[in-house]
Image (cartoon, rainbow, N blue to C red; front, side, top):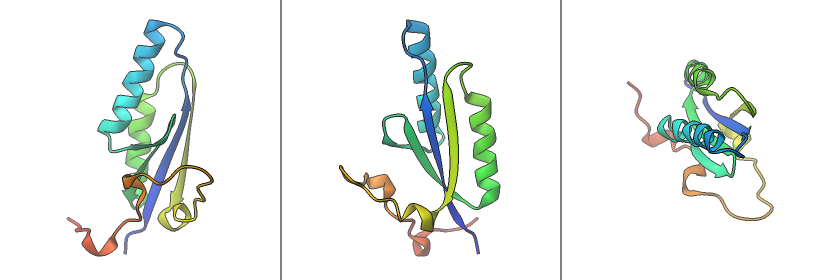
Length: 106
């Protein structure tokens, strides 16, 4: 049985110059194209099916980070993610728990 994981990416990127804003936008666009969704500003997440997929996406991240700023990655299980407590605001449509019964494996 596969273990579903969530990759959380936290980042602070410089955006003072036009060039820095362009690089920050390129990084955010990479995240979105790679299946991440925005949890809140500068925090993105995606679901992965097992550790092999986690490692694949971490390698993709490493290849796409800008030269300056601060980027952190935290990998947690789906069960751990379900324990996130929201103090203000609400979950996005992308944060619903993974429906294991409706997933297909190839």
